[in-house]
Image 1 (cartoon, helix red, strand yellow):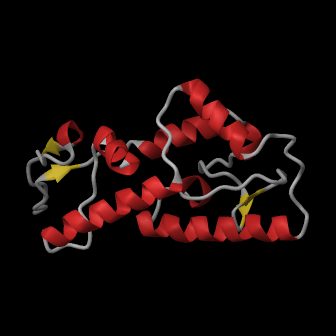
Image 2 (cartoon, rainbow, N blue to C red):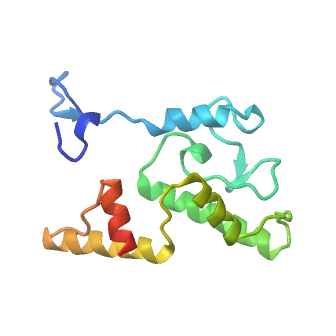
Length: 160
């Protein structure tokens, strides 16, 4: 079992010449699909949210990226491209005055909602600290980055 993945990796026996020593079961997509199916008007049969370039079809001001946008394919970097396309659509809609009025309180309202739920909040500067620390640790190992996977450690590093 690979220590980084802990209990999510199951030892396997070679199958038809397969030299793999472990299997990492995917967990995220079925749960995301289940959540999306709770609103059937947004989901096609193949488990993606109908969209045009990241804009959710028939829902002004609602955007989607990642597997819910294109289905279960690609890698993390594929999600970056998806997100960039969706954000470009959002910015274009904002510049064109096409976004509906939110009636909300913006950043302050989001912070208040997060505080009510009691979860950790990490601001942008904290994310930058985390990325820098991962790069520092990776450089010490001769790698681009050493990804932190323990949530408590990530929050501690992000909060400085």
